[in-house]
Length: 123
Image 1: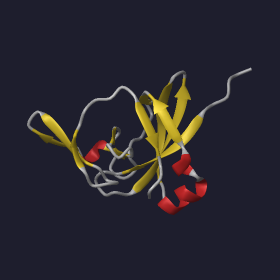
Image 2: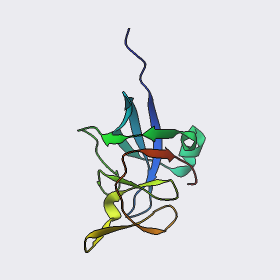
Image 3: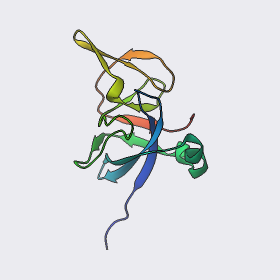
């Protein structure tokens, strides 16, 4: 008998136009894999309860992951506020990269992370 599939929808925003979108993630072993992304209305996300979904651990993407449905960026950034956005709005400044969070509008310098603790809400 095959094991059950653990998949969730987490919410993100496009860092270029601040539109909300959903990311389908699937747990494979200890890792979470981004498998699909789609435009989503914030009110519908609330009705569906997506803001209560939490994902903790390492995250990568499936080879077929389409990226942000608004700008096509395949990567994402987690802000200090805890929310995520696509990395389409990342700007290079010399050797560093700057990011303005599409949720809280705070600017930060990017740093690599091996593990994430992501939850939704606040559309």
